[in-house]
Image (cartoon, rainbow, N blue to C red):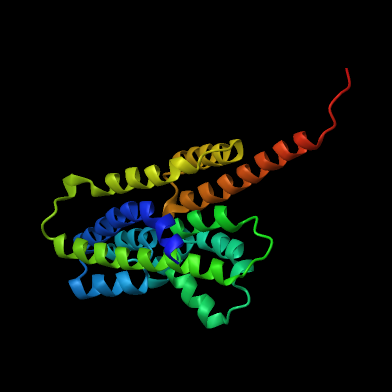
Length: 233
């Protein structure tokens, strides 16, 4: 668990900034402090919250608000499928609770460490994962409460969301160490840029899918080339 906390610690900086930005955004969108706190605790998904807020402000139908939030967070369906082998022996209640606590940064630090493990579902893996998600939840909620408290003070012109993006980039860049990862990142970035005007932030989902497919394709190509016999002189 301590190792998990050490691994996720650099990502908590980005998470904290993102939490403050989301807290401010909730108040700016017209939510009361009580409503904003409830949304932070119940939803616990910055991208979904930021997607839902303009729809709520526009009095959009409730089904559309939920649909938009689900679409933006569909990447967690992919994360969950990848994490399933490590937690399938737990009860559905425990898996549901871990799913609620899961965040992008916990997945990012967990998978590279245990993807190639011969045995999946060990206590070491479970406690490492818990060590990544609990601090993230505490920091997010704390930062979100700070943002809610500052919502009436911080002007929109400060563009705090840009600081969160820079912090997330600082977390991601050290993991770009192989060609498949680089190709995956470039494909996702290009897709996100091309689809930025898509409604309901569907471009985010498209970028996730394209990035994963591109990374898998690149890895298979590299493995296939390595498996080919070398030509004799």
